Amino acid sequence: MKKMIVVCSSLIVLLFAGSFSYLQISPPLVAIPSAYETGKKVLLIEVGNKNPFGKIKIQDVLVNNYDPPSKVKVQVSNHTKGFIISDHFNSDESRKYTFKDLKSVKLEPNTDPKEQLKKMNDGTITDDDLIYAITIGHQNRIENVLVKYQYLGVSFEKVVKTNEI
Image (cartoon, rainbow, N blue to C red; front, side):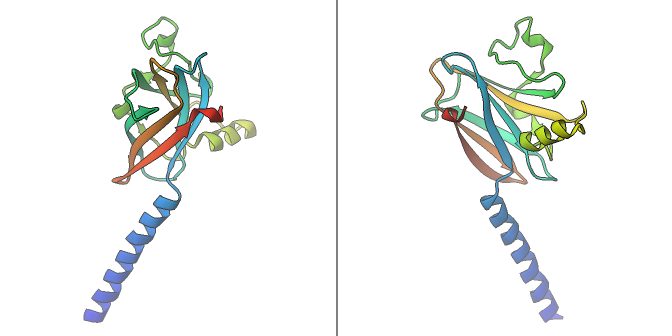
């Protein structure tokens, strides 16, 4: 009986250690810089969750030398509507889009922008397939962005370089 408890306990520990190691090697957040306004003071980063289960909760976004940006929101949309590149969240044009506070959005599973592009090219995308983008406004040119997030209770950080656009 004791042998069975030791074996089961060992398997559980190995399962958790393996899962944690996998998440460190292959973090779930996909973040792709996709557009900016002239001068890179307003930046749009498409984000998504590449894993098939669990939601991602974005905790914080910092720019350049780990400074908080002047403005930051998450756009939640679909492929028909798309995104707007603007940090004027209350303008007439921006009101047609959905901007949410950073901490109020959880990225649903299977929302990797690259995979959704494949679905769109295959003609299998629907308006129910959500897309997400972090919209950042800052008083200076944005060179890099640090996204802090949680997945299954584990904290992660992802650096996004704006020279990739």
